[in-house]
Image (cartoon, rainbow, N blue to C red):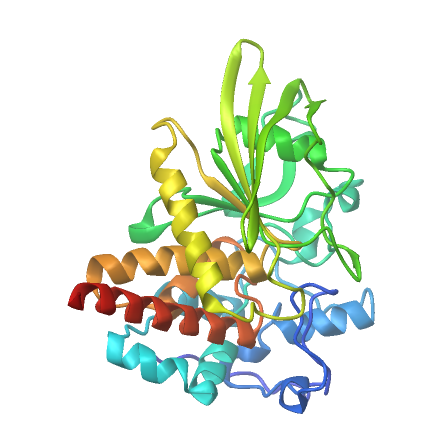
Length: 367
């Protein structure tokens, strides 16, 4: 696949790539503190401009509007629609160990972050946890509201994402609710008939990552009564089962709160994440047929959230087709929510998890 030559850009600042304290990489590893520009990495909205944007508020370069995509943005969209790299099991195991190739592939894949100018609405800043992490407009979840004209009442920082085999609206990726958006979050859970929430962040990691949006026993938000039925503590996550009531209707909801994935890192062990993916899949199959998407959130709703959803989709692909296309899945997720799988380390981790899963599958097949 060929692309128009990249414009000449300024040298990349020697700054770690990070997202305001979300899913950053560890200090101390010198190799992680420089960003090597490869191919399309310097595209607008990449981690680099995110870093700059946070260091110097207001210094973002001008964007094109609406359908007027610049040639650069067009080539980014094209890349995300066409990017593919099918891996057989043998290729997957080799590739998972090849940090350099994975790094090159990761930095070449456009992030597809949203231009903040697309959301020029007064008061919206209170609805976003991070000012540069915004929902891509075409796939955003729109809350039903008494007053459809009032944009703020319909807005939540959340996107629908496709599942395996282009299953529409299989997941919703969203930011960790803030004190201001807890009510909106529960409106979304009810409106979308979500049977499962996967939460992959602690409430605090140096600073607040997510508001505690559930009650100890019962609470009512926006006319929805939320009651805790049971709490079970497993090794790596806790499971809460809630009953939700609104009017005459009553539903069950499960929240998997995965706590052993520290911020600034990928989990130390792939097995607990794999177990959680499989547990959520089983719960999904047992949910009523009328159920909607599975909600997944971390703090910004792109890093750890992206890893979980990608792993979930790719495990199905591996079981069904015997191959995986991690690049294709990453591109598909980023088309619908910019920045999904946020760091190179996370991209490598997804490869490790899939490699482990493939070994488990072939081991089971041999028995």
